[in-house]
Amino acid sequence: MHDSEIFVSYHKALMELSHDSGFIRQQRHSKLSTLASLCGRLLNVERVSVWYFSPERDCITCECLHDIKQEHDISPQSVASGDEDLSPVNLYRSDHPDYFQAIGEERVLSVNDARNDPRTSSFNSDYLPSVGIHSMLDTPVFDGSRLSGVVCLEACHPRVWTLPELSFAVSIADTISLVNTYEAWKDSQKALDYLSRFDPLTGLANIDYLKDRVVHLAEKILKRQKGSLALIWIDVDRLKAINDGLGPQAGDSVIAEIGQRLKTLSLEGKDMLARIGGDEFAILIRHQTQPEALNHAADQILRAIEQPIRVSGQSLGISASLGICLLPKDCVEPQELLRGAESAMYHAKKLGRAQATVFDSAIQTSAQSRFALERELRSSINNDALDVFYQPIVDQAGKNVVCMEALVRWNHPQRGWLSPIEFLDIARGSGLMYALGECVLRRVCEDWSEASSSGIQLPTISVNLSAEQVLTVDLPDRIKEICANKRMPVGALQFEVTEDSIQGDSGIIEKVLEQLVQAGAELAIDDFGTGYSSLSRLKSLPFSRIKIDRSFINNLPDDENDCAITLSIIGLARGLGLSVVAEGVEHEAHEAWLLNKGCDYLQGYRYSRPLPFSQIIDRYYSG
Image (cartoon, rainbow, N blue to C red):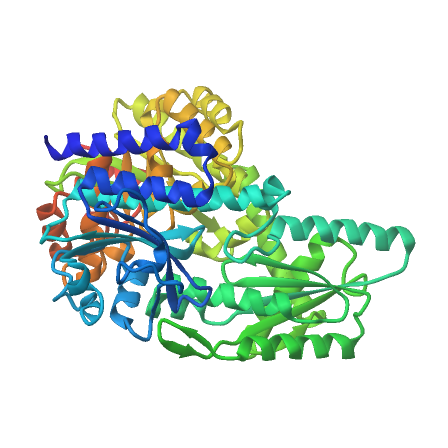
């Protein structure tokens, strides 16, 4: 059988099992045993085990082992020796640092010679020779964005793992992640509430839940004319440096630890703790809003965060900037309370970070400037005054434009041209992302119609969809309506969504994306490799293209990790029947390596910067 046929047969077997009513009714441990057995049987692997991480990620414990030599699954207590010990088998980071580092950084750990590979050779002393293991294939299990476990395949003979086997092992890990999520939902009496109102990484309330709570309490205060609220906005300083230096999983570990510390922190009047952004938290205080009480609370928060956090074998010193705003002292509207606290936090950062600032008139002036920018952005959106630049996506020859990505720009009357990084956060925080997306689409349709009227046939135009858009059930109808009004076929469009955008309500997202495809549009996953989308989730969504994030392209071909990740993404796309676009191609070396590895399409400054529509026409379609 060809690799593609093997790939299909593996995933067909897994799909049939995961939809089997008997499997669905099984308890969690039985499900793990069944999945391990299926994996061992299809891949002819002697041992398949499932492990879970301790909360500190410094230890993994075996919870399920399938040994093909046994007639049934054996106790996980006997993984290392085959004896029925009474104590569970634990593997510690201190004993196997290279393995723990590898499983935390690599999405797939493929080891053909386990006894000599530096990542696994530490198991030689008491495990690999005694059990007879030669080759290993380990894949991480994620619960949300948190690394929670490992699926370990062990072969008792030298073996080179194939792409279908790698893909299937990842799918088994993703299925276990789904099992974990399903079991968590079953254990909760408020599963739906949890999905919509809580952050999956920390388990804390999210910003929507916080906003609802602020509105409720503010209405009570205004109605009774007594009481007070204080919102403490907490921003973790320099988390990006941790993500860049140690990887996003290290950043997630920091956020999870800080969330836990704030959760256990005893503050007078604490009403709610929420995670309101990637590196931001908020604490809502009721009644206890006197200056001395808030100063004491801020000191407690800063001290709790400043305690060193150990991540990836390193002790990290963390700090945070705090902003405090009061209702009704500083404002009377709930939304103003959040904005005021956020503005005070930014002021604390400007003053040098690692401190707290209370909202005052000076900050109010700065906040008013931000609010003014928001009003101007809202006006520009409502008046279709935003601009769209286009960046070509070229074929392997580097000459033929096969697609163009539409990128929003704003020509501010006083500030000049603004890139998205300068105003998208304002749009997102102000609830303008959906309207902004429609504004961009209208401009794209107008440009396409103008070109068509001039006899110019443009290639497919790729438009970005925000998370706010893909979670709106009437999005397909609105897109069809806008296209019809501007006389542009939906089939001339491709829509890009990021991995993080498809982590919400799966029912709504699947329906929205399916309807877009039915209307004729194509779908692409943008910035692939930076999020935590599961393979099983991607299989169920109608994507036709993957765009590799530019962060993996920057250092090609010199960075071995980036090469491995990019190559695995290309292989994954091949297995799923998807085409691949590499973003951020700037140099000949990038291009040569990508073409050699079979990348389908290229995008970046090597070919063109984003250009206004008129310049695109002049450059590619005039004469």
